[in-house]
Every structure is written in C-alpha cells, then in structure tokens.
Length: 450
Ligand SMILES: *[C@@H]1O[C@H](CO)[C@@H](O)[C@H](O)[C@H]1NC(C)=O
Ligand SMILES: *[C@@H]1O[C@H](CO)[C@@H](O)[C@H](O)[C@H]1NC(C)=O
Ligand SMILES: *[C@@H]1O[C@H](CO)[C@@H](O)[C@H](O)[C@H]1NC(C)=O
Ligand SMILES: *[C@@H]1O[C@H](CO)[C@@H](O)[C@H](O)[C@H]1NC(C)=O
Ligand SMILES: *[C@@H]1O[C@H](CO)[C@@H](O)[C@H](O)[C@H]1NC(C)=O
Ligand SMILES: *[C@@H]1O[C@H](CO)[C@@H](O)[C@H](O)[C@H]1NC(C)=O
Image (cartoon, rainbow, N blue to C red):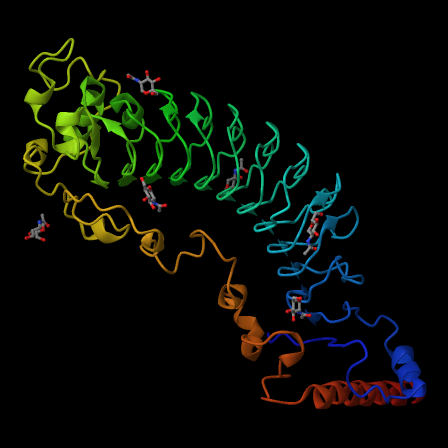
C-alpha cells in the first residue's frame, strides 16, 4: 500500500489563487478534511506527521489526533505540554530540539508509544519522576546528549517493555540502586560519557536480559564486587577510559555470557589486587582489549592478562593452585578451548573466533595504543540501528524499513514528488492535488444528484 501525502500545504506559498468558491465546494464535499500542520507533511499509512527541521519553537498546531508517527526533530521546541500528543502515537521523535520543560503528564496519554527520542536536547537538565508514567509499551527511550546530572529513582518504573535505553553523553554523577528494577526486558543500556564514579551492588538489579552495557568514558573508580549480579546475558561490556585500579575476578565471574570486554585506559594496579582478575582471565575465554598496568613501577606498561603466576607468589594467601584464594569459586569458567587456558600465559593470542574483530578488539595482542575515538563505534555492526546515535537518526534511518513510502524516501516536505512522478514543481503538485480533489468532488456531487 503506497502512502500518499494527503495534504501538503505551505503558508503563503504556492498559487493560492483558488477561489473561495472552489474551497467552499471542496469543504462541502469533504466535511472531514484531514488536517496537517502548516509546513508539515502528512501521510496516510501509517498515519504520519513529519515536521522536522523547520525551526519550530513550539509543537505546531493541528497534529491529526490519529497520527501514529510524529517527527519533530531538528526544531527549537522548548516546551512539551499536556494534551499535544494523542493515544495513537507509536513513534515520537523530538531529538535535536531545545526541550527544557516537560509538563507533568505530557506523555501520560501515550498508551501506544513504542519509541520516544528526546536525545540531543542540550538544555534538558532534569526530569520528573513520573515523566514516563504509563508508557507500558515503550521499547526505546533516547535521552542521550542532554544535560541530565541525575535521574529520579522511580523514573523507569513500570517501563516493562523497554529494550533500548540511551543515556550516554549526559552529566550523570551517580545511579541509584534499583533504578532499572522493572526493566527486565532491557537489552541495551548505554551510559558512556557521563561522570559516574561508583557502581553499587544493586545498581543493575533486575536486568536479566541485558546484552550490551556501555560504561566507558566515565570516572569509575569503584565497582562493587557484586555490581554485575543478574547480568548473566551481557555479551558486551565496555569500561575503558575510567579510573579503575582494580576489579575483582568475582565481579567478572557474574558475566558468564561475556564475549567482548574493554578495560583499557584505566590505571590498573598490577600488585596483589590484580590477582583475581588475572585468574579470571586465565580461565575465561573472551575477546578483550589490553589491560595495561600503571603500577607498581616495575610492571608499568605490562599487560595484566599476561602476568605470570610467579608475579603473585608473594601475595597473601597464595598457594600454587589456580587462584584458589584470590578467586572465590562463585563463578565457573566458560568452555576452555582445546589447549586449555594455559596458552595465554606467554602472552599469545587468546581467542581466534571470526567475530574477534567485530568490536575492534583484534586478536588480543599486546598493544598499548589508545583507542582512536573515531573508531569506537565503527566496529559495531553497521546495520545495527541501535548503535549509538551520536547524530541522531539520519534521513536514511528515518525512512529505513518503511518501504511503503516508496519514492518519497529521500525527500523532505514540499520537495517530495507525488506518486513517484519525479520533479513536479511545488506549484504544480499543489494544483494537481486541487484538481484531483475537485474532480472527485464533482463526481460525488453528480452522484448525489442522481
Ligand atoms: C533555521 O535557522 C537556521 C539558523 O538561523 C537557519 O540557517 C535555517 O535556514 C533555518 N531553517 C529554516 C527551515 O528556516
Ligand atoms: C534554548 O532554551 C534555553 C532555556 O530555555 C534558552 O535560554 C535558549 O535561548 C534556547 N535556545 C534557543 C536557540 O532557542
Ligand atoms: C518483554 O518482552 C516480551 C516480548 O519481547 C513480552 O512478551 C513481555 O511481556 C515483556 N515483558 C514484560 C514484563 O512486559
Ligand atoms: C580497589 O580500588 C578502590 C578505589 O581505589 C579501593 O577503594 C578498593 O579498596 C580497592 N580494592 C582492593 C581489593 O584493593
Ligand atoms: C587462529 O588464527 C591463526 C592466525 O590468524 C590461524 O593460523 C589459526 O588457524 C587460527 N586458529 C583457529 C582455531 O581458528
Ligand atoms: C581515553 O583516555 C586517554 C587518556 O587516558 C585519552 O588520550 C583518550 O583520548 C581517551 N579515549 C577517548 C576515546 O576519549
């Protein structure tokens, strides 16, 4: 079913020479003319209102109540008030605006809402605890690159359907225990680029389906020993560029599904504190970044993973067993390859799988180079639309997967040709609409007369 622009209108533009008479006739025969806000483009199927990139300072009036997709990104909207958006809204894009105030209840009616993008609103400093109340169908919530310094404890409560939560590039200082307790469907949690210092024991409680946890570029220096309990499905964990000196093997042992780990860019202390992590590395097959020691001085620049057993002989409680004391037997090592864990001791490549390069982790070589920021995400699968959206969705994302739009794919608003017939001028397309409407109208009138 091809979607047709139902009403494309431009204030003060176009050949508004149509007489009042014709308009009256039109109105008479279409008593329920669908509305579309001025300067926006509307589509039938699914009902869509597209108002992006017009420097609107307010949500334009006249959004059809049945609209399912409302695109308002790249404007200058500051206030979101109660009653603007209706219960049929499924997708609501408000990224790259200037949203500052969200009136209590602005989203409460949005029972069907699945995707809400409020990212890149750089004056959005705080959110009420009940901002997202009732959004039980919400699957994707974007709050990246705002100015949030904290989040109310209850803000994500009852968001049972939430799968993607983007909080990166804010100013978050801490996360309360049980912040995500109701988000057991969450698979992607992006928290990088904040100012987090501590991860407490129950900060991630309830995230039983989490797959990706990005925490890089924070100020983490303490991770509670059991901070990752419940995260048994996590496959990707990024902790690079933080302030960690130590991390317990027990903590990592709570992540049996882990495949990609980045710990580089932390001031690792490779004294006895490092032993349990070292022991975990020996037993757990994983694709990892380097883990370079910063202290003690004689180990500076060495890779923690490839320290030798002898390096820990003088540590308290050491026996010659496999990390007997340093690592409590809470976790079980995942499958070890044919050679056993021993192959890693001399610093050789650990894992070989074809997926090793997926996340730019290469072959686990000892490499002291700092990741180049521009390569950080390049290695995420390019077709993964849920990769971090630093610049918001592109026009391609915007239309991707909506094949029904057909030839409207790469046009915006008034530039869109009608029915795929290319390069009709704005005026002629407007006129064409008018003619078709008039024609239909006359047909209808004729039939009535019969
Ligand atoms: C929006 O404002 C910017 C900056 O003033 C201007 O460059 C741009 O042309 C405006 N866009 C529209 C659609 O008016
Ligand atoms: C954005 O909002 C802030 C705070 O409301 C205001 O000070 C600023 O002037 C706004 N910027 C624009 C471009 O409208
Ligand atoms: C989680 O998502 C599945 C579908 O992906 C859904 O059936 C289930 O109800 C969701 N869980 C909750 C608690 O809503
Ligand atoms: C790990 O580092 C933190 C922060 O420096 C410190 O408080 C904690 O005691 C360290 N843990 C161990 C086992 O040394
Ligand atoms: C690992 O990689 C090396 C070199 O890239 C290759 O020779 C070897 O066959 C690989 N081993 C496995 C098990 O894939
Ligand atoms: C990580 O930190 C190092 C300094 O430790 C810095 O040079 C580098 O730019 C940081 N990486 C990113 C991606 O910002």
